Length: 496
Image (cartoon, rainbow, N blue to C red; front, side, top):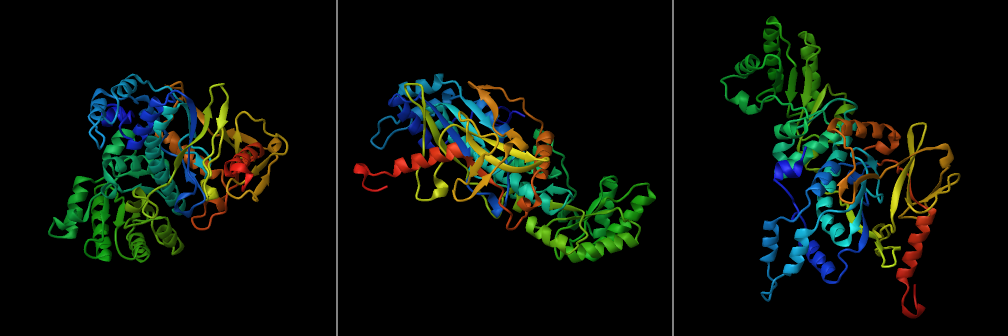
């Protein structure tokens, strides 16, 4: 699916913050535009107070970069901008530079569906300083949102313990773009279908849905409404039973189910959208079993999330399928992931790379310098630790140590010689050309499911999960500490 080309009819180069363009102009003016740099996109905390995050949005990112180009009308818009004193905001020569600029970066990224952790790069961009800078905002916009929704969907699917989750969020999503991207990300996270027909068309996601309360209310009686729906869709009958009285609604559904059966058809099930879902689902199950419909499914909806689903499961509610909307597609309890994009290295005139560090009073906000990658270690098919390491440094293959990037007193000794390993950042672009073979959405969805299976259940708890070990390789930790101490030194060696 070519998102940029099909949905937006071309480049989205102006989908950026204004200060990216002013910095780009400044780089060009100071002669730094073509200086090579490396930026990393990462997040600092798991969303939803969870123990894992599911990466998503890579396909959108690839499409954005393939189409990255300033169009004539973009440059005309920028050329018309004025400063507060009325002079042009951007020089014509700079706009000419943008017009001729061709995307030429190297990009590595984790594949969609990969389970990821704080401080590890999800995307690494290497290229001219000006291009790396211009990619910051759109990449964050794409990766932040889809990763957030894929993670929420994975948590909800864990809560249902294997029962299907139907994504019903279109009407409550954050606009058209949010709805489409959310449906895609929710499918990656494990949802079985979407109500969003456009997303179904664009991405090949199964679509599902039955009828609303308005269908019932448009007829004289609920029974008449069910009969009419069965006539229209005899092979697809799930009746919404709570418009007036849930128990009576189940009785009417059973009556129409018997009519369907007399015609050689079977009622698929019922949906309950209000009230005490545990009580009404159990009563409905009892009634349908007694009436000879043990295979009829019970679908529940009504502002569900992973916590309410877990509660209903603990109450042994007779629910087979879960319809989740608002709290999934809006990431209701945490509406932003908070991923950031930081400069980690810059190439000097002599051809050497200088690692870069952003200092902060908060240790969690001190970035990881240098050109680094992530290696995941497995034992008997189970993930045991992630190591962030400098690509140009040799790792101790017999007795490696990882050190927590936030609290260096937390350390874990690894024995890589006994482990299987995987490098997580994969080549995506080389000199602006896509080298990634890609994956279908179903393959990405399966990858997310398979990846979650490799982690211990304690890391997947919805509340108070056990922390999965992620740390810096010793050489990288030492480099970071050296740069921190150097940055904190005052003139004349006064205080450090």
